Length: 270
Image (cartoon, rainbow, N blue to C red; front, side, top):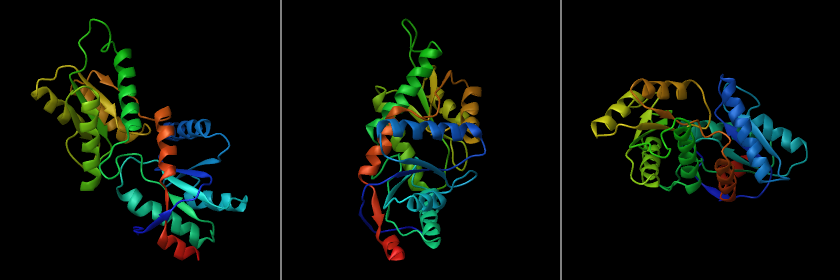
């Protein structure tokens, strides 16, 4: 149930909506991002909700905020692409809240990945910093050592062509940010190439010192799948997921500034 039409948002508490995972490391990474947002926006209530596997769910969180006296809220998807979860699960969660009696207006922000073909510099900065930290720890970006000459952008994967195109956009932008180092996308599932195939493609192009940038917000099975394949194929450096990076906290707040309230949701609430 895609919500097509929008009105400008009003301010209010922030509900950060993550995918959810059975892996406890994912919940800790999401909580770290919530804490970073709270530090960046003191005095604003910030809550974490999950679409799957974990609780609380978005509807439960929104209803609790309204019961506590809040008059509006902004929902921010902690997602990197506008695939199924954004097109279907997020609107469904809002409709569940309405069905349970939610009356207050709720604005919905864009995902953290590219929107209308534009990658936020904050996202690229976080990816580059994570990769640089991993490279330094591995002794790759150090005086007298040959730097990376190829990068794999490891992502979860989706069958949605438009969503995959945004990952390709990030890979191209990251290549530019790294001074033209070739950057090859790799997916954990639902799409090709895999981690080992991406490393092989970079090697075929002449790369010998290959690192992996993690286009994930949290660790888990999909992240492990793609980076393990890349490591086995010879990648020397693997960056951590973006997690609670301060750039991500600032990006979340930037997204709230352009959040909008679905017109059809207003009709449901009327």
